[in-house]
Image 1 (cartoon, helix red, strand yellow):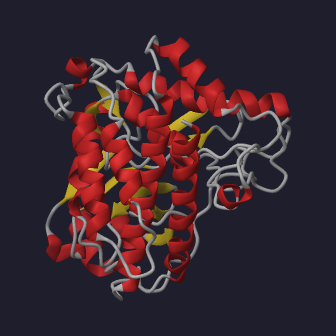
Image 2 (cartoon, rainbow, N blue to C red):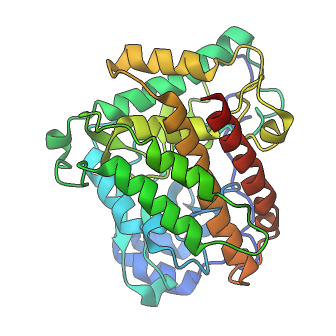
Length: 358
């Protein structure tokens, strides 16, 4: 790529209405951390995402990223800023793609919630489409997506004891807890217009594989727009974001969650219309090619991929339904959330399709 390196760098925008920060309180709190730079701070907000909110704080040449939970959310486990900060602190210097954490605040008198500050990594974030003019050949598209999953495999190879995370999660019974936990979350977020997932939940319960015996750090929300690519090299990952759902558990469940976001060229249109990344372009690998590559790179045998893929789809549906529930209950007014119920219905059809073909 010969384009200007700044052209495709992810750019923040004006803060969305209703998601403003109390800047006087924030600056006063951060003064011991950032010094007199707080007097010049300007704040903007990164676009995209339906979950935690991400802001860029700028003071001259200095830049930091602030992360906080969404307004109106009562789902603490899905927006645990302290957990995310601890993960980043543990990975600092060990996993080169994790941003360095700078400051954590659990004093709700400041912003009304936990939040933290971290290093800003300037790079390209790819969402549903490649940025206009970001031209890759089919061969580059293929290699970029393989690299995406190679980095996931690198995460699964992190030495837990070296990172001090050997006691971070409960790997025993992890698969069972995930199936039962997400089923409970679904039932707690049902609205009148929600589809019926009972048969899918039962299938997942009945098809749960035995413990794989492999335990690793898992991201739990690893996808294209949570990865930062080098502005100079479209095939090089320089950052991985959104760690608040990370834990220690079965890496195959992590792979399944990422495949839940994956849409390929042969998928039905009802699924492709909700794709979150350009994974159906010429050159992009198929799910089975990804699974084969992942298994070869990590040495982990991937059996029963239908279960992991279906679980990934179901989990994504629950996340969407939880966010839609907040909108339905009037806890948030973001108009993007109104459309999530359609995606939840589409994901059910995809789950049914996986089950029928399994």
